[in-house]
Image 1 (cartoon, chains in turn blue, green, orange):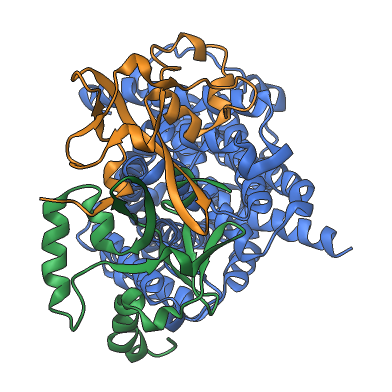
Image 2 (cartoon, one colour):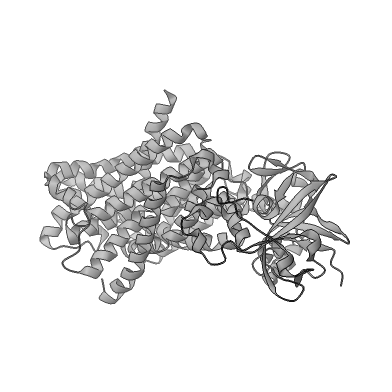
Length: 405
Length: 120
Length: 111
């Protein structure tokens, strides 16, 4: 009985964590520019992250190691340093984008421009991490994050052609704006397949003291949780496709996002989008900051844990403190959060293999996993999708820059 | 009992006698002896050792600054191999890490920064 | 100058040549045993095969593993065959063809 409750909680957790500025912005841009045609990129990204999250949960539950622990132990310091540094750099940009997302949401609510909100948002995030526990954050943000279901309700009220939506799940080639098409596809992939998500999940499993008996639950949580998150991303894409695409409008400013629901829900729709944006982004901010602090602390072997008080793990606590405030600088100086989102998502896609390939080696290691090593399907899915993302990114980013997208 | 030093000892997590995480095994020191096999003498736990695996000069620079922090600093902390035993995924040492410089930075940060902030 | 200590983490990756100066490989692993209460290094594993042994058996089971150049090349050097008098210029005391080769077991990746 307790386990069923935990599954439910886990699913809620995943839903709350999946949708954030990256998925919302990229799905909206995809829908606005290409209608339902890019639905496949959301599906592909969701499938990949679901596999990765399941693997990372299984890895930690069975081996009692987190992924960064195992990366250093198995590959040694010199090999481990490169993925560490790249991931820190790219994730810092994503963190900056999330803080920007919250700031923009507040700007839309108050009319006061977003750079002013950068430090207050950082402070709020920091206080939550400093003073509360892992469960409090996970559960609180997840429950609040259910407000994003508004996007799904909005789609239902518009009565779209569900057949047309599903048709978009099959990859097709673009007829126009080819470079832009692939660039958005890459951004969607980078937004869905966030390394910090599965690193975070692995540390979370240890914080929650999972063991081998959780392998089954973990599978349910990963599939349903990530699946539901992907479903919400598709909802955003569909809304943008139905509201912006026919009018030839592309999404270039955050201020356009409330239009996704203001048609259907009127004034309430405006507030629903702002609330969704703010909550999803603050949740992502907390997760990324923790994820990076876990990565650093575990790499060095420091004491770590959100359930500990900061005085018992000073270096861990100060790491996330420094990261949050450093990331807030981007918004503070006025860097456009939408541009920041685009850049960080495509960089994430480009650097995916650096994290996933070593991870796959670990997932097939019997010393860590015993009989729970990966099957061929899991290996193939992750390998193919991360290689695909990287290739697409390397090709499309320069084209996009040249094309002036 | 056979042990692979690189795969099974280097970079593994260290846990002290009070169950706290006390860093990772950043280095292993072998004693060279004439006509006899090298003996595993100590493990080293220190950012100095860690840095020296990337760049010696940087490691020396760090050591010079670390020395200024007090007595006995500026050199890597060595734990005798005989004080270690394997415990699950980590190595446990029967020494309290407080009695070593391992927690020096952590303690300094706690005293001078963390405890000055409310809620720490 | 007599070296009385050597560091595992620095020996790792060091190039080793044989008595005639022929390249043998890089140190990738040191195997230790506990004998008479002391833990001592009995073997040094050199070469690419040793790297694969460390990183994981899974890699050796990949269908294309056999085609990776030099993937299975490796040597097991006994402690008394390696001259550690200068850890910065390691040499074995015999010819390379006199050293024991490493054979990776396809099943477990271990020998």
